Length: 608
Image (cartoon, rainbow, N blue to C red; front, side, top):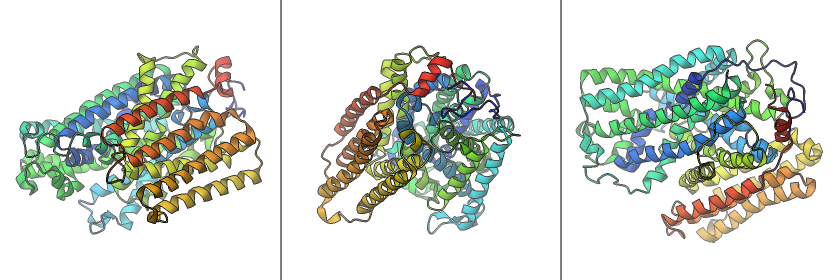
């Protein structure tokens, strides 16, 4: 394969290429825009309601966790400066199957994030357009869903027009998004701040709901969701002037700045609560989070103080409730589209999805597909919290790639030019995997189970695409395999969610269910290995091992449904960290020198 070819061998010399115009400042702002979205408007109250003042620690710990992932991601961003790169990294070290399954979950996360930001805008707008929100059901009305859909369509056109126009748009949006949280912090701290509330000098103390809530609340309150936007700059790596230098620089700086902003926002919210105006007993953070403030926390807090300046801030916050999520929405339209573009570039889905618009030089087919899928998610998930939690966990599942890919590339291709090299990579790489794995675990069994099912059901989509030719599987066999696998996963999942096994008791029913679910995944891999002997199957085998172990520990641990967990807190955390480390080394071990990595070693990076 020449440097002017696609990984699937098709010549790209006559194809329009992506415009390269972004700088380090653009990558910084892309990441900032991704991280400061709807989460800052909702999460400080949700986190306080689940953790009390200890929510401050949750922001710090989660921020440090993401830094451990940012460093190796930044290295990969400089190593493979392609657009849609997060859907491609693992391809070079573990082959198509492993990378596809991770890219599939990551893409689901990106698309559902897009939907959640559109929903956030409309939810806040319901404060002055009540026709958008059904207060009795707690969901968007049909009109609200229609408005959210219109926002997705609008930003689809913004992205298609091109990166240059979007770059200008993003600078304006980012400036606003950066100013509003800082203005909120400054005004509330200056005009109505009780530091004793922050220190926990209220009934219940600093951690009224226990310190374990600091970890378990990271997913469901939106703390993890807030930080996940760091990856946006990486998605545009193929459109930069000097991506190997600018991508790591812009991304890392953005994460550090965002940690500071979110910690200060949480501190400010905790200290500026007017308990009497809120109608809640001081220190009852759970009641505060479930009361009238939950629809627009900072707006309610500013208005409760009664100071004229803060009343003006409340009005600005209502405007920001449209602007901040809109900026994130705009970024994620491009992110999701570039994921599909990246998957098409490496031959996972038809190359039709990799078409670049002749005039605007953007991947318009992939962007259109993303918009359509995001629209489809609006109806079944018509609330912000409903779609946010799922989106956060499924996205983190895709982050499992970063440590194992980097470690494998150090072994398989140590000579590749690395513009950015993290310190103590022997420690950083495994920690990045353990961190992502713990975040998934802390989401609890109620999310772990559907996430594993979501990952599993993506396999047939790959087998129905161009990849089947590489495995030498004819169309009829591919269709039969996909149909049988989908039917098996569907029936097994139904047996759990429809209660078919309920009469067996909590442990026996789980044992039967999880044995069947694990066997279905293992059988599919065994069939493909025996049928083809392709190294990709071995390269992806670690995912099956990971899924099986994750489900078991999640169910029997402290975050599972058992009234008396078999492994109590904090030993289940430690157990899962140790098992994750074991899976990490298995994953590094099964990596191999793929043909595309070999081509890069011999001829350099392909042109895009």
